[in-house]
Image (tube, rainbow, N blue to C red; front, side, top):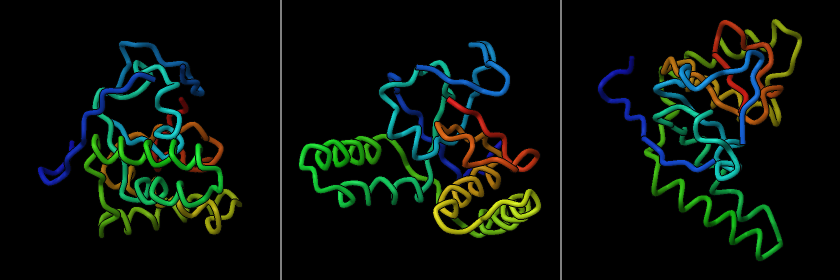
Length: 160
């Protein structure tokens, strides 16, 4: 499914539940999938059986997590965000946004524009993550499926 250079890290996750357009049952659990930033943020609250057996994240997600501690003035929240970043760094070998992902971004961008939605601003980061999922042939797991509307046929989006 992936070129030998693609490493999908296996994550041990203790995480409540996913909703998808079509409910998924345990026997449909995917072998591999890409987790967006919203899933990593809520990982401990999610039912791990709703996530892929092997989970990956992108370097983009790691960048969002690295920015997190700096985006709050609350010391307690800053510590929680720093802890989340460090745990993610310990578990995942992030997938890069590479040449293959940049080509896939063209398809993602075109799908969003064709649906009459904006592909810039706050959505841009989500769409870059979707492009990595597209380039690797991985379903994208998210807590915010509305952020990925219009990507049917380009990236499989799984709401959790």
